[in-house]
Amino acid sequence: MRAMKKIVILISGRGSNMDAILRAARDEKWPAQVAAVISNRADAPGLAVAQAHGIPAIVVASVSYPEREAFDAELQRTIDSFSPDLVVLAGFMRILTAGFVAHYAGRMLNVHPSLLPSFTGLATHRRALETGVKIHGATVHFVTAELDHGPIVAQAAVSVLPDDDEQTLSARVLEQEHIIYPHAIRCFVEGRLSVRDGIVRIADAR
Image 1 (cartoon, rainbow, N blue to C red):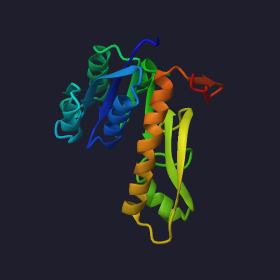
Image 2: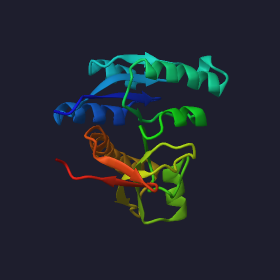
Image 3: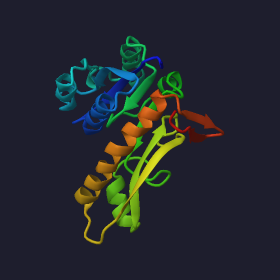
Image 4: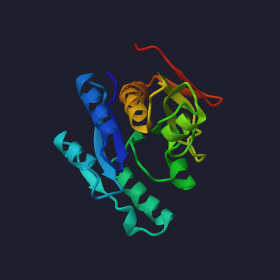
């Protein structure tokens, strides 16, 4: 029997990806426990969602730490108090310091609303529309010090429709995030992910 893995999820807002992850973990009976949800914003609606799932919801307020390093140090201390096997960024709107990222190397995942390596950073849907791409999507990747450049675990593509605006395109991409992010995390907790030469390989389910 597999040992239970512990997950800590970081959020800044409504936590829709977090909710999808929590539901999948419960419904699919993952060998994992979400030990805590941590937000850098006290007003994040996702905190109430976590509490509704019975998950400890904690605030480490970034506004209380003018220095990025001081915030990251407190965030790291809080995360490590739960001894997680995996840290999941689910709409966590902070650029993390290199030291923080190095501490969780190989055990921190993020979902980004574009088909990386295209459209790193913010405003991905607007930029996709302005560029005229016909395919857009979402990417789950390991977090590295270079923003939105870590090894890719999973991707999902959506067609860009002629009458799309940022809202309609975003909504369709988010639907795919809610599918591929839980799947990628499940693969991690089941020990099916490996990274060789910057390429992620996923073993078949046992």
